[in-house]
Image (cartoon, rainbow, N blue to C red; front, side, top):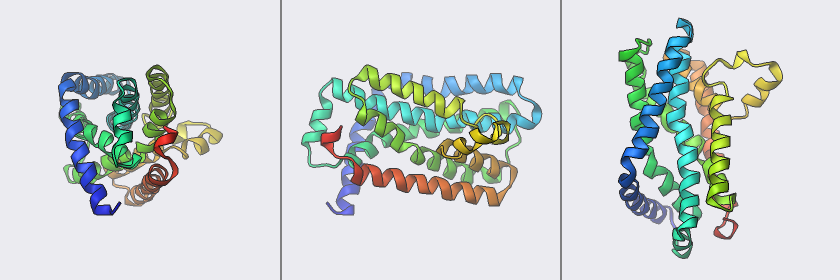
Amino acid sequence: MSVREGFRQVAVATRMLLLESSRELGLVLGFSVIFPVGILFFLNVLAAPDLRVQALVGTIMLDMALLNVNALAQTMGQDKARKEFDLWVSLPVRPAVYTAAVALSYLPYSLAAAAVTLGVGIAGFHIPVPTSTIPTLFAGFFLVWASTLGIGFLIGALGRTPRQINSYAQLIGILLTFFAPVFYPVTVLPVPLQWVAYAWPLTWGSRYLTAVVVGNSGMALEAAAVLAGYVVLWSTLIALGLRWRQT
C-alpha cells in the first residue's frame, strides 16, 4: 500500500469514527473537560505559587495523554465485544490505519479540553503563561498525544476481553499521569526513580510544556526531540511489529 493510499484510508476511517464518537459527545466532553478543570481547581488552591505552572501542565497532560490511552484501548475493547473489530480485520487496511483513525477521532476532543484547561488556568487562576507561547504549546500537545499512541494500542491489542482492557487502561493511565512527574518537578523523586521516570514519554511532555512556558528553549528542544523519538518508535511498532492476527 502506498503512502498516499494509507493517508486516504486513514482520512476515510477517521471521518467514520468521528461520526460515531459524536454520539457520545456529552460523555466525552464531560470526561475530557470537567474532570481536568476540576483537578486544576484543587491543585491551584493547594499548590504553592511557584508550582502553579506545573499544576497546569499536569492537568493538560490528563487531557492529552490519559484520554488518549484510555480512549484508544477501550474503543478497541468495545469493538472486539461488538464484533466490529472483526469487520476492521476483514477490510484491506493495516493495523496502523485502524489505530490512527481511532486515535484521530478523539484528538479534537483532547485538543479542545487542553485549550479549555489552558484558558481556565490563564483567565481563571491567573497562571502566568505568555500568549506568544500558545502556538508552541499546541505543537507540544500534539507531540504528547502522538508519543502515547502506542501505549493505548498495545493495551487494546494484547488485552483479551473488554473488562481486562479497561482495567489495564485505567491502571496504566493512573501510573502514567499521577505517578509520573507531571504534577511536580522530576527532581522531587529519589534519584533511582528519576531514571525510571525519564523512560516515560509523559515526563518529557511535562518538561517540554514547562520549558515553553518559562522560556527555557534548550530544555524544550531536548524534550521535543525525545518525544519525536517516541512517535517514531510507536509508529514503527504499530506499522511493522504487529499484525491483525496478534490482536
